[in-house]
Image (cartoon, rainbow, N blue to C red):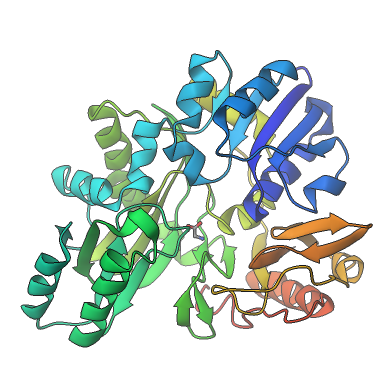
Length: 427
Ligand code: GLY
């Protein structure tokens, strides 16, 4: 493969991880543009942040044409839901990610649940409501709590709520459907049975026909230690999960292949990363949600284990020959810890000066990936809720975890915090 010009869409830790993977094979890279990128991507060799929003489809297409971009890789779900891939394809540009129709699996929880029900894919029993009075009437009839309540549309990973009793459930209906705390995403909701079990993040890359499963990780979604407090986009990940190995055949036959086949049968073949969040319950595997993009921070972890050029994988995905490509993985283990701003997942301050990055990266096996940072006057400052992702590899999970924690201790900014129990129950 000759060196390529790549455009990466997005600005978080996942997009940093994508750029980092691309840079591991410098011979394949002419230039990487990131729209809009973050403080970390601004400072990497061969990379240039460009000031175009992921929502500005026309400007992205013009940029890709003007700069002879060979391949575009989309990070977040919102541009997928807005049809960025469709528009790039119409413009004759190569792009890795699902079409708008295929991405609906993430952008509409109702679509996802109804698809799974239609094709017999295991998921929690559910009801759909677009009227808050009907939702409340239904809740009054329920005798078993907690329940899970989800806004239909995209809500940056924060649209799912666990309600523990009737009063909390009724109040949550008001918040989501009347106060619209998640915007229009909450005009329709899913109420479903609350499942108990162990969660696992399964990401696959698909070319529409063939697929490859990436190392399976565990995500720590809550802000508080011991999975307490508010839901976040994810506070850390670790993997590969030894206990998930024996589930691989079931994951393929009960979840991944039925999902891909269901989407294809509905005329929505999936190209890109399909990421079902699963739970292993007493009744077997169940799908909690299906995402249409790489997980964040799952991808920051998985990136550290990849031993095949990421560019070759995305090219094979776009061109439909993933079946010819064996993806190689390191036999090491990885842990990622998010360093967050005070207040996250609620309101947080920006502009705090970050120190200690060099010390953190001197620890063996550690790479610090940037998420919510900017580079100003040669200093990294905070600009988001999830600020940095400390990733560490090791010969076993304990070593990876110890290294990640040691590195996280080095990083300082006003209000910085992280979960100290990432890795718990993962072995
Ligand atoms: N870490 C969860 C997600 O990417 O949706």
